[in-house]
Amino acid sequence: MDAETKNWAIACHAMAFAGYVIPFGNLIGPLLVWALKKDSSPYIDQQGRESVNFQITMLIAYLISGILVLVFVGILLLAVCALFNVVMVVLAIIKTADGQDFRYPFAIRIL
Image 1 (cartoon, helix red, strand yellow):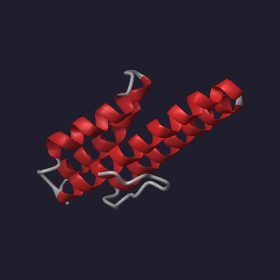
Image 2: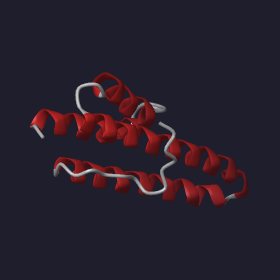
Image 3: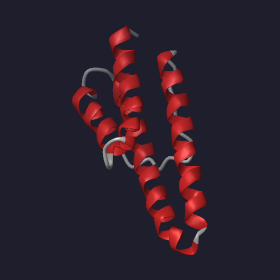
Image 4: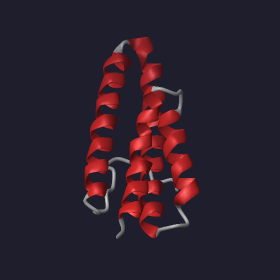
């Protein structure tokens, strides 16, 4: 696997951090990179699809936690979701940089 393929696969995961700057950027960033580069390599397609599926799952978790804020449980759940998201994305970046396949735990595989 060449360096360019690895870099684009890493970008699919790393763009999830755009959500901390742009609303819904955690979904839009990986989706955009995946959509643009999925045809250039099966590895980019696989890792991009995995990243987008995980970010969709996290968006659903954030929405549920946001609703549960009304009963005060959601505040803790939002913090746990954010921490879990960061840890999983960092692990994905590390594994992808090593050229290994990474599958997020608990991800709903829609794509």
